[in-house]
Length: 454
Image 1 (cartoon, rainbow, N blue to C red):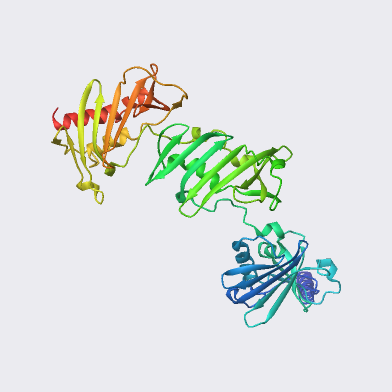
Image 2: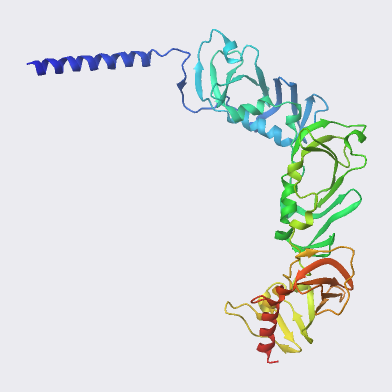
């Protein structure tokens, strides 16, 4: 009997607890957040917007759509990047209702909505929509927001709301070179009056003219172009500055000339600023001065040391013959390159057809050509003219007006060669051991000689 009595009491208690929980759940105060379906706060399409008006701590910003895109109405001379306008349009047309925070607030001040920022848009049918943005939420994951003339307070996504709080300088795109590595065609860096890097694209290769002479490829020059691709303005200092001297920009410390198929720009660097490890900068054709972080210019002092440079390389399709002088023997190679299908190309050694391939089916001549095109720089020595007879000579005949390129390797010491091109020292040194590596220059060369029967 006692057992049943206790069971009944337990059931009654559990029932009471359930009713109490249900009461408080249904009677939730209006100040508590309640989840709603993810629906758009404004039912508009970005392409229908013809005018944007923003008011925030930075002032009033008005943009109007015109035939050529968008123009700033206020401030009249505001410089802006079109990507910023696109960001605002995307945000206003994709802002989801997150949570309903308060349906009938008695005090808008607690949400920062008594004196809010605002974003208004006008559509092509002349309808207007205005949102008011208040404080960031306590957890920092959103902003309090409401429609103008409506009381309901919502929580909206932080990232999208941030687009409505942009101020003057925030409308600019801080990236200096909005390009991929493939877009660059030439680069010249000067330190004061001295050229410390001069490279130019030639088909898929890169010619290096300073501070040494040689050849590189996309992978070889990638480090310096990667630096430039990510270079961003850290702070805007002065628009249309008249006195460049105070920023060290009259006689710059560095200039960086960049070319692509679309642009030809020169970046000018001036004085450094110790308080924030930055440097004053501008484009040569502009009076606007800004700052760049020194850490973002990490290759600026000696860029050549981070590049991979070869003694000489040329696309095989541009070469008709090579004379090789090595180990006191001279052999001549003729190249009949088929540009559209390399498998149809033919190669001759002293007039005899080379037909051999390696275990992977790669032409033995192509393999040899790759080895002589990959002799990489391992050291630099300026202002010197090597003396003595070269140990190795490669003489290329090009199909460009039968141009001759003669590359000589002259012993520096027991470990290194100087590289001389057409009688002029390139400034480059290479390791002698490069020629003796397994499947390297001498290995592949001997295989060719053996295959042809010499």
